[in-house]
Structure formats: C-alpha cells, structure tokens
Amino acid sequence: MAVGVTAGSITNELGAPSFVHSFFSTISAHCEPDGWGSQFPHLMNELYQGHLPHGNALRALDELRLAKATLGKLPPSAVVWDIENRQARPPWGNNIASHITSLGNYTSSGRDVFDVLERALAASAQERRDAVLQ
Image (tube, rainbow, N blue to C red; front, top):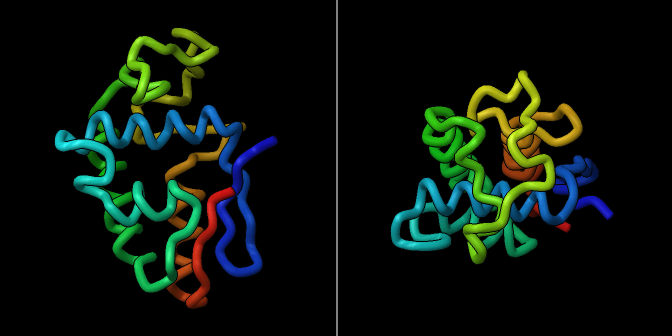
C-alpha cells in the first residue's frame, strides 16, 4: 500500500512506505546534524508523523525548500535508506535512473517527491486545510 499526502480534497501518492521513510531519512541525515527534527521541526515532527496543521504549512514549505537546495548538491548515491540502519541499501542498489541527477530530484513512479510535497503544502496553506501523510 502506498503512502500519500492529502491537503483538503486532493491526495497525491508519494510511494511505498519504505521509500517515504527513505526520503525523510535522507533529509534528516544530510540536513539535520543535531538529529531528526532539529532543523526542520514542522516537516519532520509534524508532517512525517502524519499530521501538519495548516497554520504551519508555509513553515514546512520553507523547510522543504531548504532541504531540496541542500540535497540538490548531493549525488543520488548519497541516499539514506533508513536513518536507524545506515547500512541498509535501497532495493535498486546502484541502478539509479538516469534522470535522477541529485538527491534534489528524488522521484517515485516518475513524479518528483519535492514537487508533490510543495504543491500539497501550498494547498494546505491556501485552503487552510491540514496536511495528512498516510
């Protein structure tokens, strides 16, 4: 079963639970030297945990954009599959699609996860509807 993000009446699929965990693990590992949620509390401690109040959506959007800028400087091979088990590797190993040139264009099923989340967070703020990750 796939994980999706819902803001108002719109739900967008992000990917398998392991992929979504990897996405957030990669953000934390490369952007939060003091641990999970230390730099991006709204993104990591609210949205990732399943519920982001709409009043924090713009803050989470800023955090997401900072994470994207940082990860955009790193090669796809720097992915962290599981922050609790840094030895774990993605099921695709080193067989990375050619259109993925950095961790800043992380994709699932051909859709850029950053873009999907940016649209959802913007909609959450605009529509004043909480964002839900499930």
